[in-house]
Length: 486
Image 1 (tube, rainbow, N blue to C red):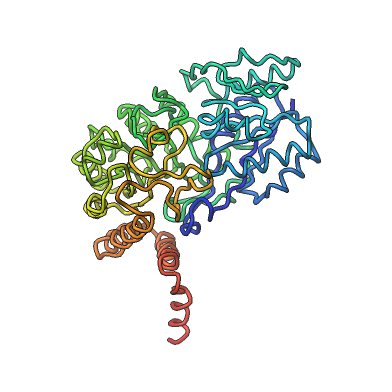
Image 2: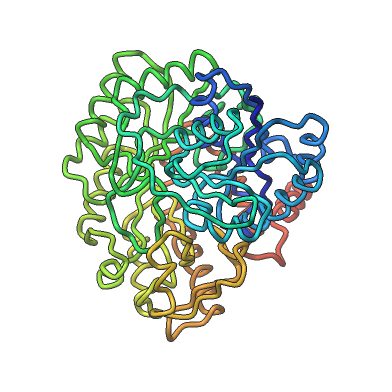
């Protein structure tokens, strides 16, 4: 059977708003993992990554019409749902008999709505390897009965929507084959985040699935039970990426890479013993017990750690069910910095319970933590997150359009009681300005420069940021004018 897996096109401006020039297209991990799993059963798999190859919806539809596979799979995420609607309808019109299956976070939590509103035939919920394989087997056999496939939702010929029971998630991740990187375009054409990579080619890697924490703003398609690859599997895969594809940097996409500290120490030890020359990016939760872990990570090639802080007010942190304290956040941030690692901190403004005063606490806390890259987002509830169900309890929430659920919205959809959308945008702009435009931040970055290339990237990011925040000033033009005058 021929199967085409598609990473649909997104518009960077739609997703990242005014920060589009600082955004990235990273290699898609989910569909390469699915492709790797299916290849072991002899299927003919093709990947279309529309973002890396700049394919439009029309280009994809033309490609499928010219050479129709037996099944097409679409990756879905909520803010890109309008694209999925248009793309699936275009596919159905061009190739009426082609079966369409969708997976990803959006359909995991909104499968019935998706099946009702689009021509999509099937939705794989959560981790899709086994569900998709069973679906393919049924289609090959000509079976019309899909009721026994766990983790599948589907539409009958009569239009009835059926959602089967949940599938038990894969327990031993080491049984999974490596993702099918060879089906992607050359890794060199992907665009990493401007300031958040040291080297290229870069590849995204997940060493675990699931997250045990209960943050109200977070959806967890892989569930709350964490399963992880062994350290040996992780390092073998890193060596494979380096040898076969020349990968020089890895971005670990685990919800919390440092959750099992003993495993992290072992991964670092194996990297060092292997002599592997790869730099990498990891994530941490504030509840770290052994700060020496960060020193081990540094010794094994890690150069930056991302920490979700969210708020500087403990009551808001508790309301968000972060399961930690400001004190833990301070200690972990300091542990990262003491290991001579770069610190990226995530904050959210406009949380449930936020006021002007609590947002001021958040901005001050961001400055106090001395992170190199503080990021200030506005609270945006996504399907599958607890806040998606309860948002109206804490403020107003506009659910009218999924394309407004973006990572860097300029049009807030959730506004806590007592605040306004205009105020949230003003506070976000103020937060970035105060966090980045101060002598301590400038000195921090200058001291942390490891190469001329780092300096060039820093200057590019500064110019982009200035042009974004002060649109009436063309910073690059002014710089060029001064150079010419001198």
